[in-house]
Image (cartoon, rainbow, N blue to C red; front, side):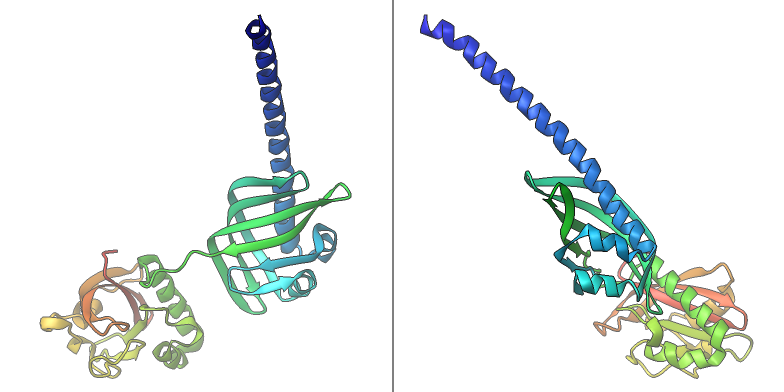
Length: 286
C-alpha cells in the first residue's frame, strides 16, 4: 500500500522538478538576450566615444584586461576613449555562464578595428568575457577580459600580400625615402619572417631595398638579373620578366631570417610604376 501511495508522490516531484528546470531555462534565455544587448550597447558606445554610457554601465570598481596586454579601471577606460576610436566590430558565438542569481558571465568571440592616437589597431577572433553583477535591480559590468590567439611564428600569404600593398603605398607617398624604412623594418615594414625587397625596372634594374638578414652578401645595389637562389636558380630575372600590377608568385630556396637555414620560399611580387615590390613566406605553399 505504501509503495502505491509513493508512486504519485514521485511523479509529482518529477513534474515539479521539470517545471522548475524549464522555468530556469527560460529565465536564462531571457537573461542571455538582455546581457548580450548590454554587451553590444557597450561596443556601440565605444564607437560613439560615449563616456556617459560607461559611467552607468560599469561598476565603480570594474576592471578591464585587453588583448594588447593593457589593463584599465573604469576611470582609465573613460580617459582612454579620448585616445582610442573604434571603427568596426563584430560579435559571434555568444553564450552565458550563470554564476548565481545576481551574477552572470557573457562569453563570445569578437573582432574589431580602431585607431589609438594615430596608430591603427586590429584584433581578430578574440575570446572575450564580461562578468555582470546585479545591484538594485540593474546589471553592471564588473570585469572584462580579452584573450587573443597567439600569432604563428610564420607569416601567411595574405599577410605577405598586405605588407607588399603597404610598402607600395609608402613608396608612392615618400619615393626613395621609403627605402631605408623597408631596409630596417621601420613603420611596420617587417613582421617576424616577413620582410620586403624592392627592385627598380628597366635594362639596368637593381635591388634598391632589402629588409632581410644579410645571410648572404648585401643584395642592395646588385643587378636584379644577378639575384639567384640556392643551386644558382635565377630569381631576379624571372621577377623582372613576370611582374605585373596584378601580382604574381615565384618559389625558390632562400635563407630564413629567423633560423638562417635555407627553406622553400613563396614570394608575392607586384609591379608599381618604376618599382617591383615583393615579400615571401616560408615553409608552405601559398
